[in-house]
Image 1 (cartoon, helix red, strand yellow):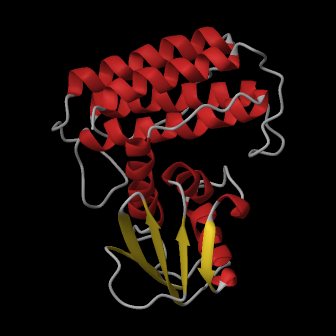
Image 2: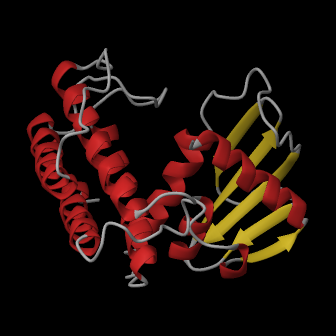
Image 3: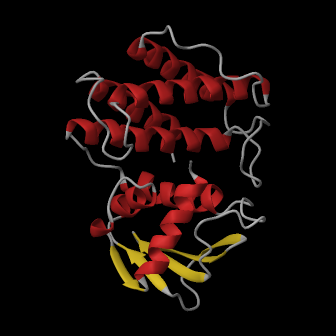
Length: 240
């Protein structure tokens, strides 16, 4: 996938819509307005510039960004992260939170999905939601399943949703089978075996539902709806 191309387009759209009003409330992030989203994304971009520059987590972090104009800062941070990713390419060793990928390629992908989801936030705030490329949505489903929820985060059983079941997601000609219990989330490609519940629908809606940006009424659910809701709860815990 042409991640930089998508990042440029998605980040431009986010900034453009934000200019319609920084004070609009964000439905999917109670208590936030568009300004909070813009400043959050700018700080994420700044953080990744430092990660790519040094290969490790910046410490201390964050610096004091409080005096910066939100939109000017966002524009500068947006350009800086694109430049940093372009300079790094996809094979530079660096810190990531993915146990299977410690290269800059991880951040090419992660920054696209960070931006898409927050682009949706500011669009929902201004009621001007635009489509998500189906290829991006399918890639985003894959990414939220692993490493966001399927990483080694559950060994202590630290969850309010200790569901013990198999759930399947099917959309856009692809399937993922996810085996969940209190101490693990195992993501498998394909549709082998039985599942207690299955989620299906349009790729963009499944992607947005996984990230809490679309309701259960936008997807199709078969099987045990409580398993589906508990699994969605696990994702919310993993993505905080």
